[in-house]
Amino acid sequence: MNMSRAGKLSVAVTALLALAGGFVGVSAATASQPNSHVQPQTAVTGETYVIGTDTTFAPFEYRKDGELTGIDMDLIRDIAANQGFNVEIKSLGFDAALQALQSNQVDGVIAGMSITDERKLVFDFSDPYFDSGVQMAVADTNTEITGYADLAGETVVAKRGSEGETFANSIKDEYGFTVKALADSATMYDDVKAGNSVAVFDDYPVLAYGINQNNGLKSVTEKEQGSSYGFAVNKGQNPELLAAFNTGLAELKSNGDYQSILDKYLEQPAPVAASGFFGLLSDSLPALMKGLGLTLLATGLSILVALVLGVLFGFCKVSESRVLRGLASIYVSIFRGTPLLVQAFFFYFGLPQLTGQPIDVLTAGVLTLSLNAGAYMTEIVRGGIQSVDPGQTEAGRSLGLGYVTTMRRVVLPQAVKIMTPSFINQFVMTLKDTSLLAVIGFAELTYQGQQIYAANFRTGETLLIVAALYFIVINLLTMLSNQLDKRFNK
Ligand code: GLN
Image (cartoon, rainbow, N blue to C red; front, side, top):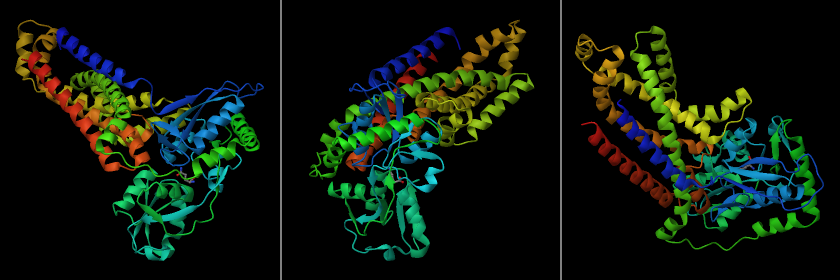
């Protein structure tokens, strides 16, 4: 690659990153609350704890005007203020929050999380703060399913890793139904409304709240006796945080704050009339733009690293050394031979468990995408170099040019032309692959869309907007890349 081409490329990538930076501002997935009270110094004073929570579990945690709110959010923030520590909330999804806690990616979880004997083996729980239980709901148009006995041969849905799932599994053989697990309440409700599952098992206060908000469901059974909710830390970790939570909770109970939080969220608000499509568009655009910024940031960084990896390993693959060729082959086969989703889980949840070293979500995301894209880039570089007729190298060498000069002046200019369309292709793929990082709570475009329909239950329209944004950006960038290709590769 000659210098000017490399220069142009880096200008393009820098511009992309600047664009991304402009959108981002602060990560929408995190919000912190400074403490306001003056309290006696304790082990937690002035500390900042990262707390994981569910994506949407209204009235315990959900988004209102983009802000995380709900009983759990008020409780943890008020307890933090009362006890003089700070919290940074991460909205990860229920199962992911529990995984994150186990890998010490977060210090605690508050997510309407039931205190169960099984969980007590791996987590330490606070005093209980709310009594709950599982209930079953069906689509409000459904007149067929009125109890467990009508479920024979049907599929029901429950949240992955939740008490609702455990309960459904415990009675499925008796009633002859199948249990399917999804990651969050909003998708579960959609699944029932779409008719993919006939019923959902979820905690009764959450179902009641959603039904009151016209989410299209109705409950058909009495609630089951369930466990109480507690705040959790990893077993044996952060005991001072747990103690502070308990002290704070007791104080909130005695000063009336606890009761007013419950009253505030449990007295059912009147359902809000849905705004039209353009209302939804203008309400959701700020969050989606932030997400798009992070999408572009992760793409830009990953492509940059992948390009370096691809060139390095690509040259290894065509080198005369067997060791280098072998190394490059191992790298490519590992990252092409395993799914991207598994890699993302591994880098974010697995690696910290193995090393004891927490990793930030952007780093884990970029690591995943760049190592993955780098493997494909390696093959693009190898293919490009090898597709230049060997006669070209021989001609260069017979003119007395050295290996490096022959590569630089004869082979690479031709190879780069051949590689460019594949590079552009890989770039588009990596951009789309960033959406998979939503599962580890990276606040990119898809994640933002999920947060929005988790709160307003307007899945179809929100996904249309999200897809349109990807479509526009990808096509603009593809056009731009093709223009650059035409100008510099002719
Ligand atoms: N209370 C249930 C549990 O702990 C569900 C929690 C949730 O979905 N956030 O399993």
